[in-house]
Image (cartoon, rainbow, N blue to C red):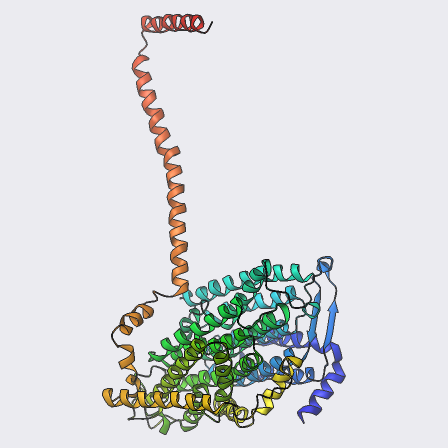
Length: 630
């Protein structure tokens, strides 16, 4: 059926399908925004129609074999033409993005039903879909940069909808992402200069030497910023407090990871020659290892569900960065598979948090407990995705992580150990989350009646369960996604088959042992504290770790805070210099002139004899001076 739909769409539109993927969501977004408030039902239908059309059109792309669209415009003399291209890599990511957007969009309609800003959010949502399509279809790096940068404006708009009186989280996101985008801009300039063209399809891998190293680093930092890796990550936990849950599910939970991973892989594989074991490879792996360990460590101690998930949104991208950095076939395949899996389970987990918040008014794990008996389908969806993100077989997260473990071990033991530490913290975090939220004695916030508490509505449950079910499907039948992923790299992965059960049983046993240690850790913590939400407090408050955690919770290690401190210091120095110069002109010189004037006033008392004496003395002085100068 899907194949018939794809064939019909591609044959009907052909190359026009490329810009149609951008135009249709944009036009319908404007109609959604302009729709009168009295036409809410029609607005919602129009919104769903836009997402359904986008999903259907994305299927049509699958039938286009490396299709290009080239439209010259005013910047053509500099090579900046509107060039689009669809090929196997962009095809797969656009389809994933389209169907995740459809499911999260369906959830958003129910979640935002009583929100005053719902029309604005739906407008931004569809514009985001159009810009993501444009970023993935762009065949010109400058055109890609246009769509990429436009996403930053939409991001800011979505972040201030919930709390317009406090825009600190939105400004923080704007600054951190803006810095990453400026670096990307510099990287694009260098890359286009070295390649001799801005057209991505015409580029050949550039050796990493000389100025190419700077271009590569800037391109990668731009991609890392979009993906939410360190050091551009700290806006995500802050956004979790203010932003609508559907925003967290679709942006840091899914689409930004897809875009960031897309550019990372293309930079390392298509634009530059990243060699395994090289200094650049090691640098990327270090960033990935630090991101996954520190993100997991911060998630471990959170007692607010949205913040816990936001830190894991950071941690999971660390696995992807680590895998890409290996520059090995198994690493690239593992990175893309985990990218897909992360979009599935992380989106669903954020939606679960939204379902809980819609029924209880909070996602604070200290205020809720025993929800499983009231919200069984939400509990099932959350638990399935928790098992997936923790890497439990036979879920998809297990298979993608095993590929990453394999790549990390092949590159260096220290990276493999870092990945295992991250796996332990992930499992421990979600054991705490699921235990605290769904099991144990019933505990509800004040004002919530247990007799009236029930599961989320169908429009919320359907996306959550569909995403959770896909996590299981892509694990049991991982050949389905992996066959497409392996084909992306052509001869680079020829002769290798990464689907099925992992090839190394030893690594599987080690991974299962790590999960078992996480379970034992949870049981011990629960036995000591008697509460699931406090099951990892013995780690949080351990000697040494407590001090580090306290400092981290106070944002002492926040790159944004450090950057702003440097900016404030620089501003203070500039202000001090400015005030010093002003003091010289406005105070010092004025006082000197005043002093000289007061001294001269003593000799300027109106006496004719005194004036004659001064004049005579001056004449004598001039005569003596002329005699000395002869």
